[in-house]
Length: 463
Image (cartoon, rainbow, N blue to C red; front, side, top):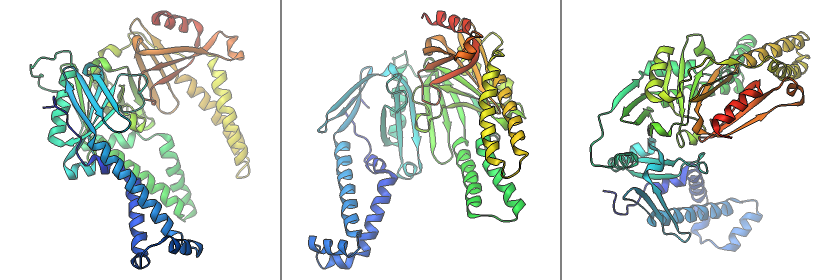
């Protein structure tokens, strides 16, 4: 079906135009209507100059806006007409025959992810977007190829790519998909509410408390609270209908109530497993897991979840199904005691700066800020742990919300040791590792550990 050159669906042209173009076009049309009488008498340059010198700059804005819209629309249409893609044996070929000719030939087995998405516009017109990413360090933070096709054609293209990038390239049908986990709408809502970070919660809570205390609601306070509620609704719409399935070594993630997302990736493309314990979720003993796969989550600087908030036993089962190679067999060790000096100093200075700024409100806030700084420093040090066995390297961080990251050694791109003159006396330093993934998970820094730990890591990496 895709052995011959095909084009994207024509709706890729307005999609490329985007919201900015829509606003620009709407503004230009409204200005045109407002000045229809002037243009009806016959537009000329001298008339435009007289209107501009008279303080009316709308005609100039109209001309520029319409020109930009016209140029962008024509260029998008030409690019659509001159862009073709097809599958040639074990390769995906994308040809753009515009003035700046571009030909891409990508081996199917180098494709790390095949993502099928449908936003509201695409659901109305009956199309879907296919996003492809290759396992490349150069384009790790961007999507490599985007196609817009009719829904049935998009699904067929997705199946063809998934089948082609697997090791078995025969015509044998794939095994039936097995559901690893799925979540109800109530579980999705629980994930959104309990997954809120302190940065999301604190401003709204303080705003509500102050407004209730002062018995008055300002416009800013209303916008802060409404913004938080809208954020929760949008997150719920994204998490609703979450399901992950498995067929042989390929995983399929589906989620979204309005913007439907379908991700697929191979198990061998997973570069890390990220386990998170949001602040509120810790009170209920809940965890969520994510994987670092090139191309998944790049658009919003996130990594894809393989489960919503679940209990520890359920988490272990899901991780064992999706990423069994990312389980560390040794217990993690806490950051060196010398690291407490750095943590307390950092948060202490930061809290004192805030306390000094708030002394005008009440003098007791300064010593209170100092105490808070010490507590934050201790919690920060306690949240930083490290573990390493013969197969994986794991580290954690966090104060209120905790994050645990585990990598295979062959997925680590670089490792560095950094220290400072004070802590160098204790023979400790921070280990900084980078992996191939989106910018949200590409770099991880440990707490303060003995330099011997870095030497062990370097040996396993072959440095």
